[in-house]
Image (cartoon, rainbow, N blue to C red; front, side, top):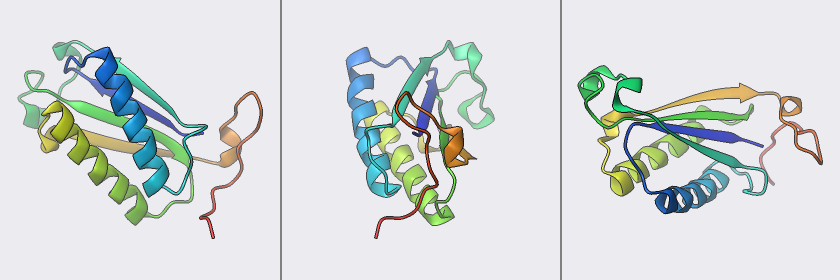
Length: 127
């Protein structure tokens, strides 16, 4: 039941956002040992002045932020692999400098994540 929230000041075509979301879901499932069925991806497009990042020239450069609300339990190495894949993909697909892409994880107990049909459990690697 992860929620991946992308905020950017770069204008992205709505169809491109949908393709990116599907690809991101697959990457998340693969790297984080999960599935896509309960994953949600959200895009927020904001005006240039709504994001500030010093290395991006304040609010002048393109910036992409990812807030990843995930179930607790994954290793730093696994989370880092996902971040590096995300940053590389954003750079390649949207031409945003890798240094202008930031990711923050917020980890939750499985029971903090709920849908209409279930309450999440603890994450455990497959196997």
